[in-house]
Amino acid sequence: MSVDYYKIEKENNYGELNISQNVFESIVTKSVREIDGVNLSGAGSIRVPGVTGPVEIKVNKHNQVNIKVEVCVNYGMNVSNVISELQTKIHNTAYEMTGINNLLVDIDVKAVKF
Image 1 (cartoon, one colour):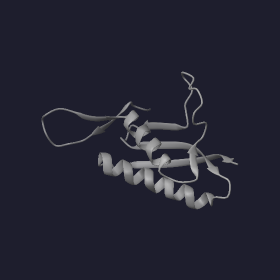
Image 2 (tube, rainbow, N blue to C red; image 1 turned 60 degrees about the vertical axis):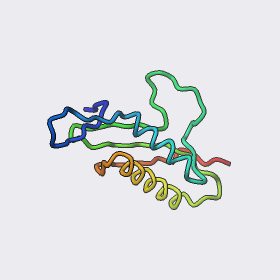
Image 3 (cartoon, rainbow, N blue to C red; image 1 turned 135 degrees about the vertical axis):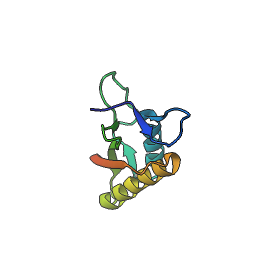
Image 4 (tube, one colour; image 1 turned 45 degrees about the vertical axis):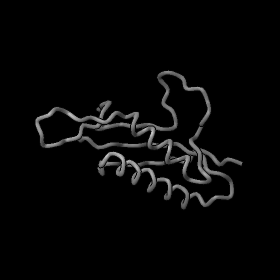
């Protein structure tokens, strides 16, 4: 079961605090742009409604943010190093911007760009 928002559990009576999945998608997109040698898979192509893109964000019933990213790596780059750097970048940036540490970041390398 997936929800559209991450619910921040604060101990106050002012109301609910929620972070949209779009916020996490923006963080992922910016993080990918900051790492040399990697691009979102299919970046620049037209999005079809109902079809997921290279970034998929889900918040499960345990309020954990699951991030799945499909990328292509430039030819000649060390795939393991680049992907590890990207995974760390996404996690750290999301934590810095939202304060959420309950993140799972999966990265699928779909292609090598020549």
